[in-house]
Amino acid sequence: MGARMQQALVTNDYRSILREELAARCRQNPRYSLRAFARDLQLAPSRLCEVLSGKQGLSRRVAERVAKALDFAADETERFCDMVESQHARCQRDRETARIRLTRHAMPEAAMQLQMDTFKAIADWYHFGILELILVDGFKSDAKWISRRLRITELEVQLALERLFRLGLVVRVGEDIKVNQAGGFVPGDVPSDSIKRFHAQILAQAGDALVVQKLEEREFWAQITAIDRRQLPEAKKAIREFAHRFCNKLAEAEAKDGLYCLGIQLFELGERG
Image (cartoon, rainbow, N blue to C red; front, top):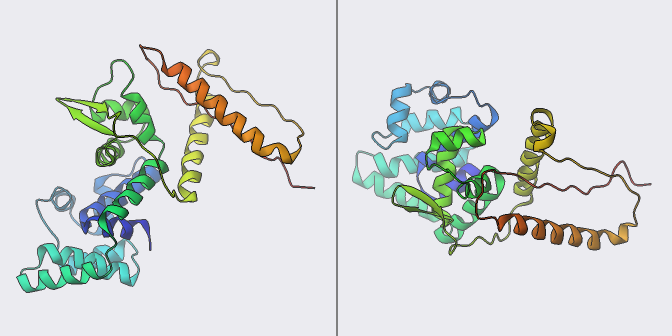
């Protein structure tokens, strides 16, 4: 089952699937827009905007067309259409029947919500970027400002903030957003693909920094060395202990005016002999 349908199992809200699909396409192509998404779904941009905001709904016929445009499998299409029909069918009996079909395959909501939110929080680097950016002097709880600082789209910022609020990692205090120290974050069984995706994004960010940042603003260091592979567990432990000490020491500063990333790579070069 794909991530889109897993998200559907959490809330039975077809709009969340459309929002996540739009966000995924924006990640792949920063120039992708709501208008382009509407074109691909064969909907008028104004109609799609009304649907995403909850001001309008879809018919089952249109839902089937949207599911086909999103290349859903047969079971995913059926579930997506049931979500639409459970909210917007004209007949109350049809709405109730659709809701019954949805509950037959639903996972426990709390467990699935935790799994999906954990996955989302780990998979994309900017969730942690936002958490740390909140601690930087002059932080503004404005999606446009955060978007400019992290060089991501406003839509990505808005969706990321929604997840962070759901997880309890951030709270709203008046007009401001604050890190919720009491909430904590202890990921459980995080899929390995999530970790790979996170580190791939960080490596891409490092590659950009190597090219565009001034020498005095960055530090890249590498040494190639022959080792005894039996020492790898000890080496990994030493790296983690150093990273924790290093970051904790810098985090002690009362005034913070920058957002940095520490990345350390240890991997085998070439093929094993």
